[in-house]
Every structure is written in C-alpha cells, then in structure tokens.
Amino acid sequence: MLTAIAVNFERLGDRPADEDTSPPRPPTAFQIFPDQNDIPRPKPWRDLGT
Image 1: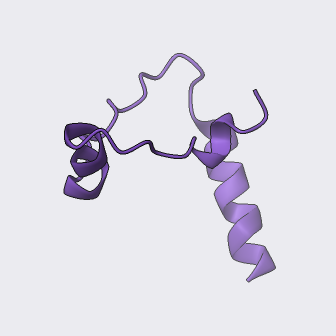
Image 2: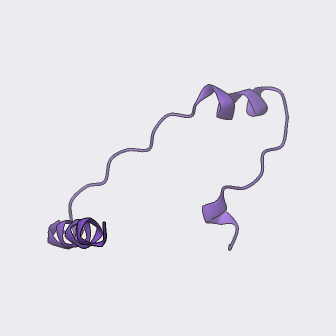
C-alpha cells in the first residue's frame, strides 16, 4: 500500500504546474436544501482554520 501511495506522489509531481484544474462540482441536493430553507450550514472543514 505504501508503494501505491509513493507512485501516486510521483505521478502528481510529474504534472505540469500550469495545468488547469477542473471546475468545481455543482452543489448536491443536500447542499442546496439548507440554502433554500434558510438553515445555517457549518463551515467546510477546509475553512475552519481561517
């Protein structure tokens, strides 16, 4: 398993830095419902440190 992880790191390192990233995915029904019903949503885990 560690070998597979290492190979994936190598593949990521070989990608060009200027390669465009994929566009963000559209929100799911579970993400849309609280917004439509004025229900507050918690911040995503990636934004908790900011």
